[in-house]
Length: 307
Image 1 (cartoon, rainbow, N blue to C red):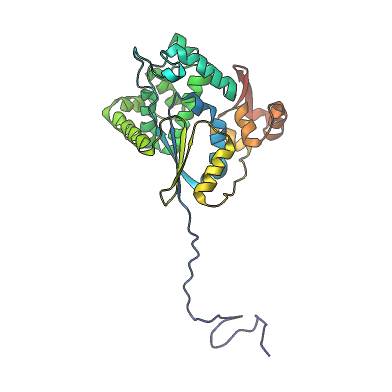
Image 2: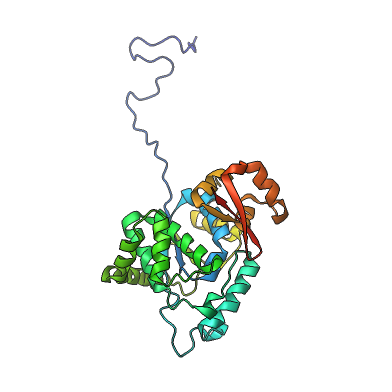
């Protein structure tokens, strides 16, 4: 009768239980990981890029374990000149941008003032883009992405001219970096060269408008999503490029998200946690200790900052 008692060991093989057919067997426990590169082609003064921040953040938080994110500067505005900049959309001079920005802000509920484009317009997006590249060079993608967020907050919500060196230095310095040195290096040839590399990458990706998100797998097959789209678009794009449905991570606790982001608008919280605008106050009360955050308002939109 076969002995099925695994407590009895075979004296010859030295095995307790079933030894198997071979004395030595090679086993590969490494699951082949699919490598996806996601290219986010953008610009610091792109209003629709500001509008998709809530959606993009959730996509990165819940599905970022499937891909490597590469943020690429696209060069939206080198300089204003006498001719039309974007005649198809009625943009001939800086003041024409103000109304468009306000419309984007009202539609997306990511607040945009825009009045500085009438009173004191940004003359070029290249200086702020070069600062991004220098931070990326010395401090990595995550810090550069943080800078991009701070720059957009300053421009869109708080009406600060991020084309000016003093504003850029202040933004970078408040991140704990050397604003003076970084902005100075961005003006040197290295800053121009790094930005031109991004422009070349933008062309090679075939990105002509902002935002453009391109997902590429290890077989060099890609999915391109142009413009601000609903959250499901990005998940469907990732599913298509993976060839299977990705598993979402749980959304981060609001306390952790605020600690990382420092400032969150109501729309960002609503999108991240699937709540309605009217539920925000109760949600904040349940999720955050009262002494850890402060509630403020700009342009009719609520936002919270960490204390």
